[in-house]
Image (cartoon, rainbow, N blue to C red; front, side):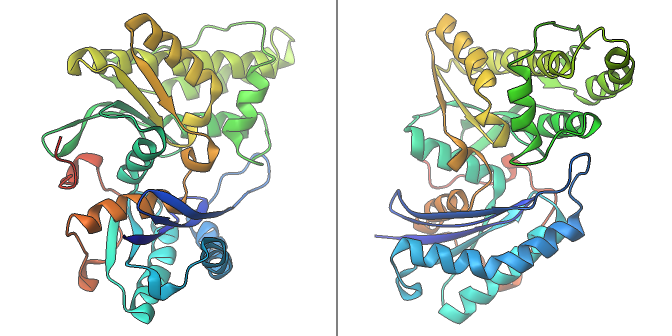
Length: 336
């Protein structure tokens, strides 16, 4: 029996979760929400995490029904992410590890999403679409690595959606992407936008710039509604993701797709990906907002896998990095 606690704070979500041999004991989260039209800055996000982390830790321990002496390892997000928030949370993880006399495990954020998705859905060996505010990657496991088959060459899909939400002054509560999704459901007119797939990679910066440039004029002359623009943006972005995911599936001869990351909660993305899977005779796996959105228990799960495989991080190496690619991690805990 191994119990792991995970600390996550790479962006505006602060989460602490505890897992015991695949059973989620607690999963507590706080979100830093800014006013409509504004994004979140690293310094302010770090202050939010610093102000809330001890309360979140107390709630996670209480909710789990265990005591710190029962915990086997302390896991934290090493990266990728925003520097100041990452460091704020890592400092607390290092501190409690020393106070409790527990080993530390530094976890790659993306690996956390993948391992949590595999646990919750029981997907065997899926092609993974990882979509969030900071990342967009199509991934498949091969020879002890999660290999990146395709990715964004500029901004992430979540960043593209967030930017447009700021243009429309859409609320950031609970998240700009969620509110765009709700508005898109009421869209009736499709407006053609740039569709930029380059081999296995995608580009979102041009679409973002284009829709921002046309939005004011089209809304002013009444030729479309904000809902139409949200609908058109979603349909275009998601079609690009389905295309490169299907191509990766064909290359890997895969019959499973797992969507992870905050944007993976989007029901329209799941619907479009599901339709492609049906046509290929494949199966789609996805999780709900408890595990799609950044959370502490996903870091605990990845750290649990690593710890059981004999991986611990020496205190001298428990730093953070804003750039930490998925395929840098040797996946020693998988033997398939």
